[in-house]
Amino acid sequence: MIYLMRHADAVSDEVDPARPLSAKGRDQVARVCAALGAAQGFSPSEIWHSPLARARETAELLAQGLKLSAPLVPTAGLRPNDDPTPVAAVLESHKGDVAVVGHEPHLGVLASMLVHGPERAGVFYPFAKAGVLALSREGKRWRAGWLVRHP
Image (cartoon, rainbow, N blue to C red):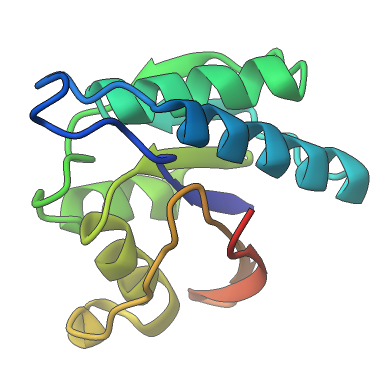
């Protein structure tokens, strides 16, 4: 399984240029953890995250909230406007379940590439802040499974 998660709500650039999570964002992650914990089965072997503060904090709170032992892995190529092609290629060959915490529009394009193939990279899956999309392998492609839309 691949779990794609958008970072939770962050403070504005004017408040703090590093854009850490806001109180609302921390609450969003807590609600995601409650939903994922209740559903059970969310057990990534790694949690990849963008190097930006809001994604790193979201990943940290996710791991803490669900008491996951999965290592947090800062991962290149997950910034908002990065080309998702290299990450898609790594995910295609990755063994084990992985959670990827990142940003829009990157995640929306990445999800489309995984589900529809690189030729459909123009299709966009919108992610709400703190939204999670589960993808499972179906032949050579991935299939969109469950979605936590508005925690």
